[in-house]
Image (cartoon, rainbow, N blue to C red; front, side, top):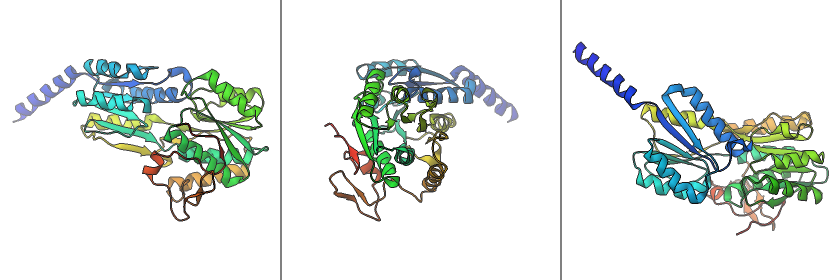
Length: 351
C-alpha cells in the first residue's frame, strides 16, 4: 500500500509539473499607462502574479476594441489560457458568446451582469465611496457648482453620479452637480476640455469619472479643487486634490484564482462594497476640514457594517418626483438599470 501511495504521489507531481502554471489572461479596454481604470486593473494582475508566483502565468492585451474582442478571446482560449478576465462592460456580450464555445475555460467579465456555467461577472460597489467623495465636494464648494466629467451614460456611470450628488446634497442642499459627457472611457483631450468647460461655467470643484488624470490636471491649472476616480492621482494636482474613490482589484483576483487552483471555483455575480476592500478611498487631503473628514470616516464605517445605505429614501428625481419613499431603498436590480438623475444633478442622460 505504501508503495502504491508513493507511486500515486509521484505521478501526481509529474502531472502537475507537466501541466505547468495556470495560464491567466486579462483584456483591457485602455492602455496600462492610463493611470486610471486599466492601470488599476493591471495593478491587480501584478499583485496576483507576485502572490502566486510560479503557480500562475499571466498576460494582458491592452486597448482591445469591441470589434476585435471575439477574435482575441478565441486566440487566447486556443493558446492554453484557462482563466480569462475581460475588464470592461463593453466586452460582456462577446465574452458570453465565446464562453459558449469553450465550456472548459473560465471567463469573467468586469461590470457586466451575464453569467453561465463557465462565466462570472464581477464589480465593486464604487457608488459607496462615490457618495463619500460627494460629502467632500459639497463641503468644499463656494459657488455651489460642482462639475462632473463623465464617460458613457451607462447605468454604472449614472449610479455613480447620483451617489456623488446625494453625498453633495447631504452636506450642502444648495449645491448642484453639472454633468458633461465625454462619451469615451479614455480620451485625455476630451476629458480636459470637459473640465475646462465646467470651470468656465463657474464650477469650483471638478469630479472626474473617466480614466485619465486630465480633468485633475485641468483643475490644477486653474487652482480649482478636484476629486479623482479609479486610482490615487493626487500627484497630478498636489495643491488642489481632495480625495478619490478607488478600486483594489487584487483582492478579488486573489480569492478568485485561489478558488480555481483549489478546484472550488463556481460562477457568481460578485458585487463587493467597502466591506470587501475591493472599493475604497484615498487618504483625504489636508485641505479637507477636520469635521468633514470625521463625517466621511463615520459614514464609511456605517456603510461597512451596513447601517447606512446611500440610496435609502426619501430620494427625489430632478423634477421633484418622489422616487424612493422614506423607509425604502433602491434595490440592486434597479441600481443595475438606473437611468434617471436625482435632485441636484444638471444635465441629460443621452438615449
